[in-house]
Image (cartoon, rainbow, N blue to C red; front, side, top):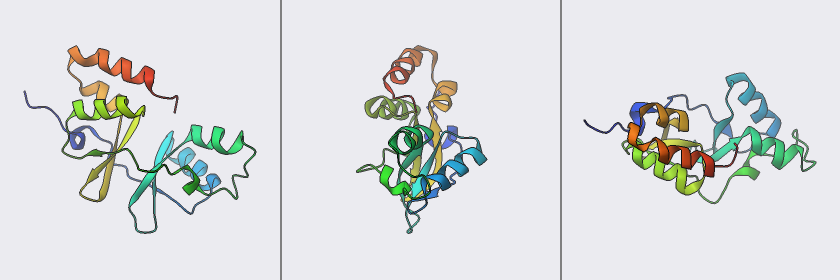
Length: 143
């Protein structure tokens, strides 16, 4: 049986928050889309990173930041952790585990084409690899 790829299991919704948008803008978009994380894109429309609801609460609100003033770009790490559109589910799982993340932006060339979550991986992982997923989930921060 051929291994599924990230492209086959991803959510194709690539709604981004702009790196110059405020944390409040990001929070409103997360609420509107009913998601816990979304990609951060630059003015060049290239992926810069991800922002999570936890980033907003811990990194801004709890740190006495003003969500109407703090820019989303403050949550951009050195390099975004991504997966290629044609990479396997095993590669997605390995990347999630290695980097302690629960969601991966899916890149095709330089274009953001979707998001793969741990739930997407779980629904498509062979039964003998579920243990590796559970281990990856336990390592990932709660975001």
